[in-house]
Length: 199
Image 1 (tube, rainbow, N blue to C red):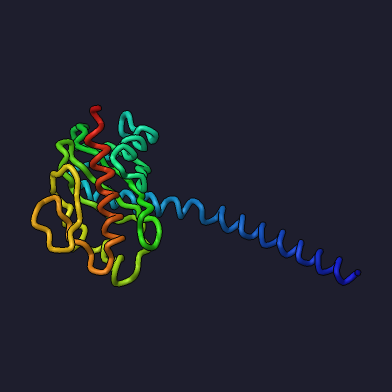
Image 2: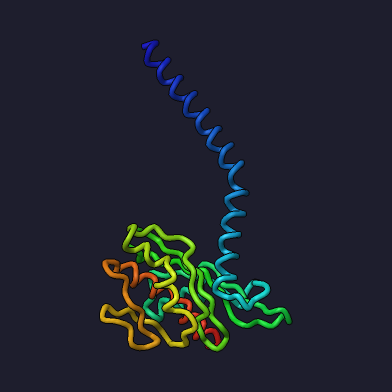
């Protein structure tokens, strides 16, 4: 009986100490991780909108309205996490930068940054977070794939396995159709939101 009590007390003490240490480590690493995440996002924003000198809160952005727009466009697996106005040196808004997460990746969520000019032209995309299969889905984070979206002005993109022949077509990554579809849908979420801003 005494051995059982001793074992329970020992386990309780170990659990409490481990909890305290984990909390301590979390507090120490919380700010550096947040700073690194912000730095990564700002680098991505500058990549997809190099003409911008600053990024500010987009006037009128509302997460629920964005959700409704995406749902109306059949993009139920995508979420616009953040929308910022891209501002030039004169202070004029020249477009929007969005952080978009799709839950349709093969290996889990994929988060991308999308830059779209006011006229609807897609400046480009940048991958912020991806955990797809090495050598297959991870090719979504290569310039060969990402540059297919660059400087295109289309209502929406579709992927093809037979070779892109139009601006709205994206060559699917060989052996990674699910990843391709997820990325295309994430980009289309940004386009759908921008197209409905005036509605």
